[in-house]
Amino acid sequence: METLIQQIINGLVLGSMYALVALGYTMVYGIINLINFAHGEILMVGAMVSWTVVTALGDSGLPGWLLMLIGLGCAVVVCAVLNFSVEKIAYRPLRSAPRLAPLITAMGMSLLLQVIAMIIWKPNPKPFPLLLPTTPFDLGGPVITVTQCLILGLTVCILAGLMYLVNYTKLGRAMRATAENPRVAGLMGVKPDFIISTTFVIGAALAAVAGLMWAANYGTVQHTMGFMPGLKAFTAAVLGGIGNLAGAVVGGVLLGLIEAIGAGYLGDLTGGVLGSNYADIFAFIALILVLTLRPSGLLGERVADRA
Image (cartoon, rainbow, N blue to C red; front, side, top):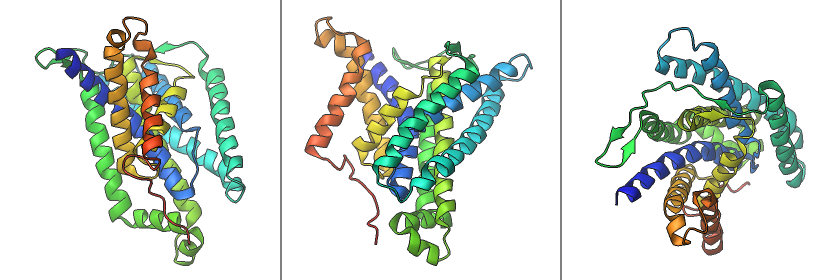
């Protein structure tokens, strides 16, 4: 039972990080029906920028939580500018093109960002400094760290803020109008290009948060670190229902739980043939089953019908 509870905690933490990235995927898809496959690399850039800032200020004597806050602020700014530029340069000219063109462009942008990051930060993995207390809280056998508590709390707060933004603010109404019909929204005073760019910026900020949390939780950063979280987050968005904010979170948390519990019991289930490093198979098996039984995702796809 202790092992199960510990794996549930690990799964919730992992799923929360998937959910933060999946929210960026699902917001962009909900407005312009584009899968931004470069989104995982935005997470990587956020982690690398945070590492750069934290390492540079490591001898300043500032407390760890303040270093993390400064690193997060710099990462959010850099990622927002980068994703804004990617949308304007790579995606906006292809907005009226066949849907395959922006998809291929997104894949190319993902590889390009990886190569640029490798040139800037070099290919070798780098240890991420320990900024928060490492002594875990004992829950009567299972343990949880301060960093993991922060990840869970941030995910809840960000989802609540995002739901309020989309459903109860002027910007949210403009997002929903742009998703339904950009041309008509433009006639009503909405600037579709601005709304789409803002959506990319918000998604980049979420990816920057996830990147810092990923680096702080696992203690290492590298230029290829964004590929697998990006792929898993896209899986989570599809699992929950692409275009559905709540679905992205549900899909991310469910994916994290499946992966963590599978990793904890995979060796026993296979008689030692497969180890925890094969835990990824559970996530994609779950995706195949959901898409077979419910193609629109667990909570249903939510994309506006364009007039």
